[in-house]
Image 1 (tube, rainbow over the protein chains, first blue to last red):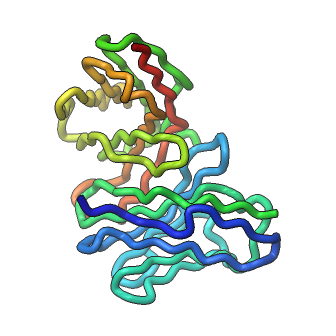
Image 2: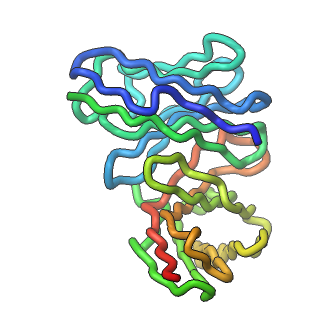
Length: 112
Length: 116
């Protein structure tokens, strides 16, 4: 069964450093998403991406964040200058065109 | 943001009995609802969904009920199995059928423990 994959599974970085989180969505999907879950909190929407552009973003998704689909398979989330409060699980999701989103296993980001 | 609420942080049931997980929402623009199951250190796994034009959807042991007037949905698991022990998230989306980009709003989750 096709699945969303994410790398790395765990990323440790120093505050102020740039990180890139990578996702490979399900191959025939058209809509792509990033969510995050800070420990003990809800899963929160960050951004949606469709037709090679951002379609919606949350207040969390400020200028420090960017997304890119550099080729036909990868979908990346970049955080330019990480802060302590960026420490969280980051989930990538995709959907074909209906309403059900399928999630990857997540990347645990730890900012020291 | 309390648009989707799961008021029970945890639920404990015996194997073979029914598990009922509840979810309330406040935004009347939500018209598609999903339940996800999540194990520690894994991503949410889709379980079952329901569109606002229905009041029930069933898939094997899982049934979701939607009460639009009460802005309430519930997930029933019958019979419950120890392997069902996980965190269950309710999520809602603003428009079905591809007319929105499908941002999901999640509840806080309910930890279900099924005892053998």
